[in-house]
Image (tube, rainbow, N blue to C red; front, side, top):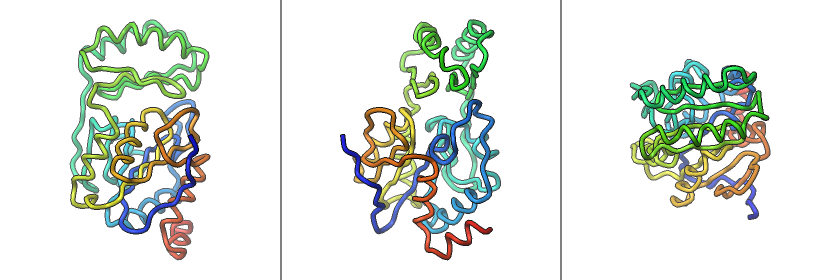
Length: 255
């Protein structure tokens, strides 16, 4: 498949952004990432430019997003849409860890307790196992995860990414999260633009394509439903900056 260069359409846009690998470079440990002031200023300026039609669509929890991007408190779908803050600064719907997933997490933690570089991230109803710091462990982790899946309710699935995997309930879908935002006044009747970098973003690309929107995958490692591509995080930031008038871009860089 030949991916087209990115050209954002004229008119009113609704912008949806993944975080890790899209706005921020991946790190061996998820807690090692940080948000610089220039990115905060850029996002704040774009949010104003779009009259509030900007939201994060991420596998991270809303509380983690808020810690990273404070004090912005932008709209966000966390845990692939299992948590939401639908309006800037509004209340957050939080999702808790079910007992059966907690049992799976404890069993896998015990099995891989001596594997250096492996990191378990327990995010309510989502369990992530990060192998970026131990890539050689990924095949064994996948086998153990498939075995453990039988202990979870029907509908749970394993989403394998480029550096690990996640246990997710059926309703954890980025496309569904974007659809929910598009029904809100701030986003309705706009052209959706979604930028992501991993397998978990594919469902979001598919939904945006159905809406006639713009789907962009960052540095795709294989087949993708996205119709456009960008090579890296720096290119994402450059594209976002291009959404602002020149004077606003200068202000975002110097604020």
